[in-house]
Image 1 (cartoon, rainbow, N blue to C red):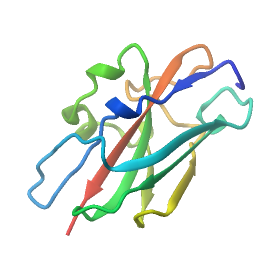
Image 2 (tube, helix red, strand yellow; image 1 turned 60 degrees about the vertical axis):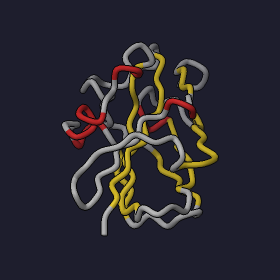
Image 3 (cartoon, rainbow, N blue to C red; image 1 turned 30 degrees about the vertical axis):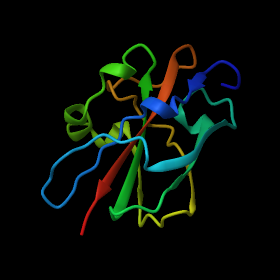
Image 4 (cartoon, helix red, strand yellow; image 1 turned 120 degrees about the horizontal axis):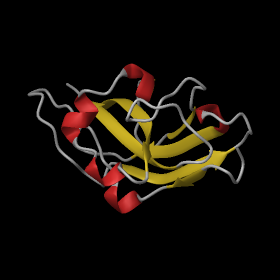
Amino acid sequence: MKKLIKISLLVSIIAFYITCRDESMSLSTDIIENPKVLDVSNSNNASDLIVLFRVKESNLTITTARVGLAKSSTYTSFTTEDAKSLSGASFAEINNIVPNKLISVRLPSSLLDIDGDPISHTTSYKVVYMFVAGG
């Protein structure tokens, strides 16, 4: 999948899923820093990719991060309501988030994109970061 899958990371328009105590949702671009995507294999599925990022210190207690892939063509229409209804097959979940610690996650080969479609090396994707805040 090297060079065939086109992954771009649009840091300024990243969609974030944040659930607070009152279950309210908000969008933010100030939660992560140093996001990177590495294409490390040629399996022609999501396991070719490693996503790295750090969660910044904030007044929110981020407990869980979820990372998914959105088709570049539909990325801008992804909303917090879409994030709430995502199937677990469409994101990788990282628990026990520690602020400022580098998070590295190799996406599972079975990961579907946020539309529920299999990952294809001929499709361009953007990374979607979603976070659950608690307590």
